[in-house]
Length: 108
Length: 114
Image 1 (cartoon, chains in turn orange, yellow):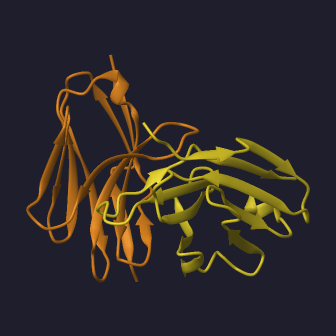
Image 2 (spheres, one colour; image 1 turned 180 degrees about the vertical axis):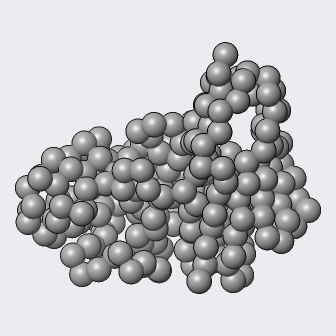
């Protein structure tokens, strides 16, 4: 069964304290892995797409990496405005499967 | 910057009533999707739509659900006879052909079934 698991469920960081979020997946025929940011009561906001193992993408304080079984979202020196839920999703060519997300809180 | 829009932002209905949720995808996009997110749970795929027909649907998308693209801009999700468990946020998303499969989501419609 296709599955996407994110960890941790929740993460509290001090401002400037770097960390990583994990997304592990077991799907047949990965076409792409996506990271989204979701603020409360809003739709997911696209961050990155990764297509193959070894690929990396960066945007400001965020960096996403991909292996054959998992992806990491690294957050460097986070700020309070980075507080949100970060969602991982995989695309198999037919459907998108989402993880349950990691709720990140960055404390000033 | 183009964006996906959805109306209404919040819909309250009585159990057994029909509701129509509306979406305006990004204008040059060709693939359209509906997802739902029950409070506190993961985003779940409902249906994908391309070339005026359903291309994929999940087990959740049963006979009480239907989708339509009534004109060149709108994409709708109809729930024929709502149930309490249909209460959720419903997100529309769209993507263009060859855009690396990136989907852009709307802000969602919160459906509350009483």
